[in-house]
Length: 350
Image 1 (cartoon, rainbow, N blue to C red):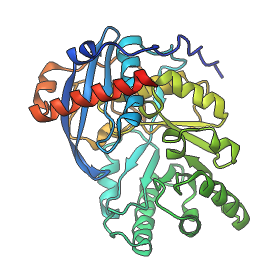
Image 2 (cartoon, rainbow, N blue to C red):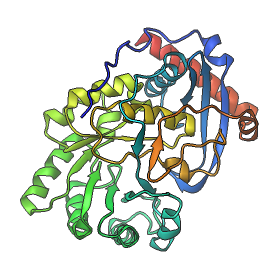
Image 3 (cartoon, one colour):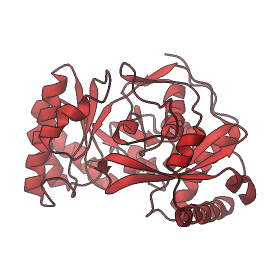
Image 4 (tube, helix red, strand yellow):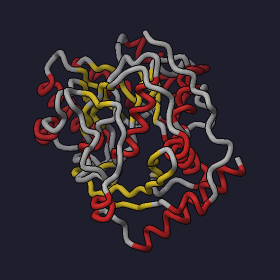
């Protein structure tokens, strides 16, 4: 396999001045095709710098400390650029939200050539409501519908976003094991629970690898996953980890196979995920970077959508007409400007 490029130079020691950050800032609201994470529209700020465009899109509930990582990633993209790629395209998976099983075939038809599918499970906003037994029956139907579409040769992974207890995860994965899962992503909320679940799965003879997502990208110490032997692989996202170079270091230090994923981004944000996936020395799993299919628009006419199951490594330049079309109202623009200021203040202090 090709060697990973040196991630140096290090990220910028300090972000640009506030005035420079805000000078090229554009705030957009892009509608979702399917309700996802409880939102009907994705709102992000785009920053323009000497190296291109960066996306700053921490979710509304994130405070300045967590948002500052997202700002660091946007600054890296727009003011510094990324390491050289070792591949020209990256394989991607389709994503199936908590939709009724009958909706699965039409939804998967939007993902050209994707043979790997991530299925959202354990969501309180699922069609079955909030109780575990009903949600599990709904999840099983959705996973079965996906397996029917992709056949036995396709890869099916499930993502619980920490929604199960260890006992619930064990029961759910026992029920789903017949669908030959590639892995389960963040089945439980804590690192300790992930470690306990891995032991329980092994004792029960259930061969489903465990992937850590939130336990890596939202943790003060991502390496605890390795220290506690809590995962078989990790899911990494550029923005929550403060940029491509920072994410490369996390992957190197963890020493586990990595899956690159996104956080419901426009093509500008997805381009950063592609840069990370393209720079990894090994890429054994399809990446969760085809999420633009869940959105009802984009900021460029040349969107990063799957072509034969992969995304190309290429530049993304927003269209002025689309920036105007999806432009957020003045009050939301000011809200994001204040958020950039707060995140920058925390970034400088850190």
